Length: 148
Image (cartoon, rainbow, N blue to C red; front, top):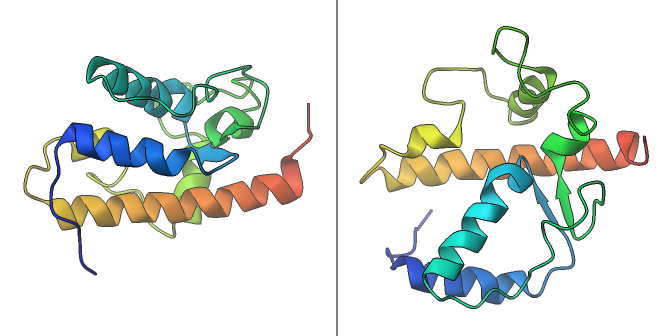
């Protein structure tokens, strides 16, 4: 697998928003709690035009943004962290969906922060997360969507 050459953040965000405008719905896992606000803020600070300003909208909508962490915890009713701060059913489901055991350095995106120069490893981590999110979305859509 080939990886694109590194580009600066403005180029990356500009390309992201150019692609984003072509999709009706995005699916994330905790995107409402981190990814979307982060991308919005970085874009605003770097003066990058934002083509989709509707991804944080009404929390209980699943379009144009379906946050699976919200859906699979039933909007926080079951919680995202266990009683002792450990793994929950949502993180267990996500790991199961990606066919990977819980291992140190393999659990959270923030663990990639020290990955300077480890581009392939970070890209592979992200790809596993995308695949797990797609699988969980299909499970949610087929079996759980509509539960209020």
